[in-house]
Length: 74
Image 1: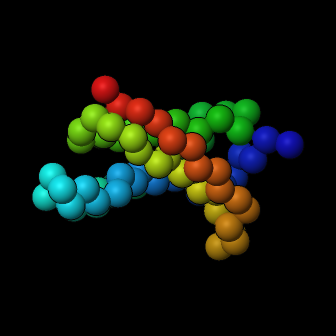
Image 2: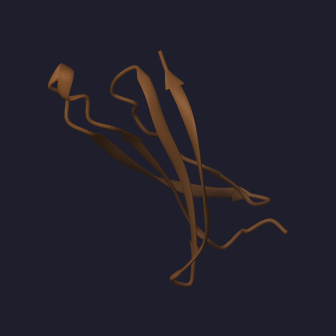
């Protein structure tokens, strides 16, 4: 069943790289429901490399679920 009444966000995370003197980086993107259970949002990936991208779904204050994938930005 498509979820049409949830708060959906995308959390982007890149771990710290001490050898390059780089701190960890995080960004959260609020997603907007487009219809039919599809959500869309726009965010910035500030540098290339491997990022963990986690989609989080919350409805009525209850976390319905999440899913993390790794994306490679070039």
